[in-house]
Image (cartoon, rainbow, N blue to C red):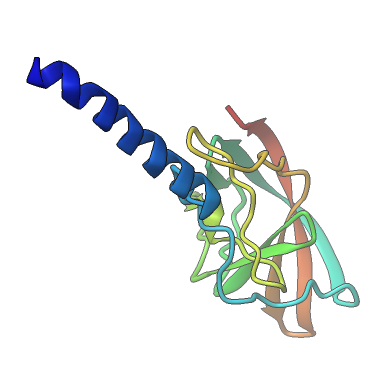
Length: 151
C-alpha cells in the first residue's frame, strides 16, 4: 500500500522538474556555438593557385591530404569564406585532421559541424582555402573539396 501511495508523489515531482527545466531553457545536450572571435575574411588578399590538396568532410571532422610537392608553413584555413582556423604547417604528403568546431567566424560563431547530438543543422563545406604568407605578402590559395559527408 505504501508503494502505491508514493507513485503519485513521484510522478508529481518528475512533472515539476520537467516543467522547471523547460521554463529555464535547459538543454539535454549543450553544443558549443560561440568562442573567441576569429579574423575577418580578407576579401582583398591576392589570389593564388588552386593546389591539389584534397579536402574531405566526414561528419564532424575535416581531413586535408596534401598530394603536392609543396610544404606550407604556418597558415590559416578558411571554410566558405567565413570560418577560419590557424594551422602550424601542412607538409607534402601529410594528412591533417581537424574538428570542424574549432573553425570560428569574426563574430565568434563556431562552424555548424553537425553530429549525433547537434542542435543545429550542419553546414556543408563548399569552399576551402589556405591563407599563407609569401614573399609578395599574404596569398589565398584554393584547395579541392572532394567529399562532403555530413551524416
